[in-house]
Length: 115
Length: 116
Image (cartoon, rainbow over all chains, first blue to last red; front, side, top):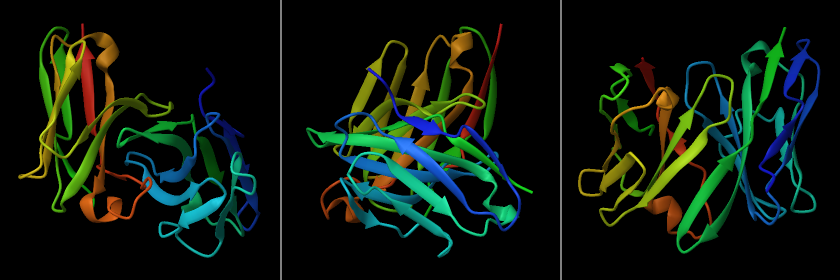
């Protein structure tokens, strides 16, 4: 079946511009996660949704970052007034909890470059 | 706190074995292993739950020692396709007790290069 898809794959933004990154999770997956991966580092947790409810946004670095999942499926991560330090790969993952095990499946990511 | 992975990098000849370690200072509920190739998504390898599990498929296996809060990934008879960066991701006992899924805390990764 289809995996997690993300769009756009690449985004170049001028500093101060707003951007919106889209994630289409695996069909039927209740949980959705956003991570930020800087060059040469592991993914860092940003936020988590269970269906349409945003249960954890402790990893969002500032109030310029906003995520939503209004119908419990597709999610959008929005970054307002982008800064150079926002340049990174933004990964989306979806998961389903079964038998006490929750496996997160990652999308290919959106590579954001802020100039 | 971010789990600590070791070694940072390893270079092997095809057919050699490798061990990658992941340790945490926090009580862990689960450890997740992923492999990521340059410019691609992290690919799920396996998940281990507290209870001292060992799992494996093909020539890749892993163990989880909950007393030491450590997990190790074992790659035997390595193949060229095993090259990439390996990440462990952890969820802590405290976070998981709230129910539902949790965001993972990843280590900095171990770079594995397999040479023919």
